[in-house]
Length: 362
Image (cartoon, rainbow, N blue to C red; front, side, top):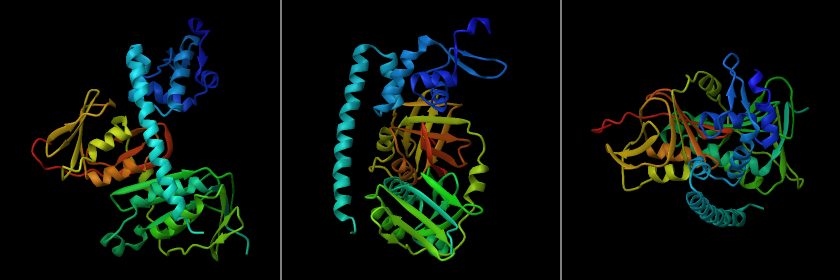
């Protein structure tokens, strides 16, 4: 490797530019920041000093919340195009911040004043965010009446993370939280909260810097930093083995990375009814209703051409539950579970089942 003596390993380059190795792999997959050299025998990636400025710019753009579709314009466009993209993003960020400030103000006004088997301490705002993300996947109506456990959120406390899980058989939402401390006797233990209880816990937790979770044979206790202790009412039942579902997912053959806000706007066009179809052909993504393309949001697509249909309300719930500017859809087959998650934040994952669109042209 004489010609590559000046190259840096992915770990060294990551430390130098302030990006995680996993982020560098992601940007390589997206062709945003490919390595200078890939060892043909080992597959190891190597980077050069000349790539440092581009890598730092990518990091700064992502820290500013710039979607990859906009970041590629800044990275590869003219100065005028880059300036226009940055100014447009800054305007959207101001509008989003104002909307968030207003929503948080309303929530704040509505806020209500033997040895443990497992304990964990997590951030209150993190727990509230996790509840917000998974609760839309809780079953309601006839499904929850037939299977009451599907009307609940599973909270699992393990040594490495706290997980919140919900499913209605058409969606599966999983959010992992990293506790600041945890102690578990035996295997991870969990409890069930119905959707109303989960929302109540979130409304209380969001105002706390952190809180403790204590689980034992007598029930569940939540310890606030203000000394308050809450004992939520837990539900009975056995939650579906969601790990088996996640572990059994086939490899993805198609990947779509899109601006989450733009894709949500295209899917959420309320003038249309029935399944919404996503089609890819090369780097082009189109959104169609009733067989007619209605939008073509900017996207980065890999894999062969794809046509996959969704119930728009189900897909919208998955998009709304995500975080960050980008959304990643990983598709193994048009009739198999589709993974929907934030493009470079792996702590929240949603599985969405496609539907069969029998309309002409689909």
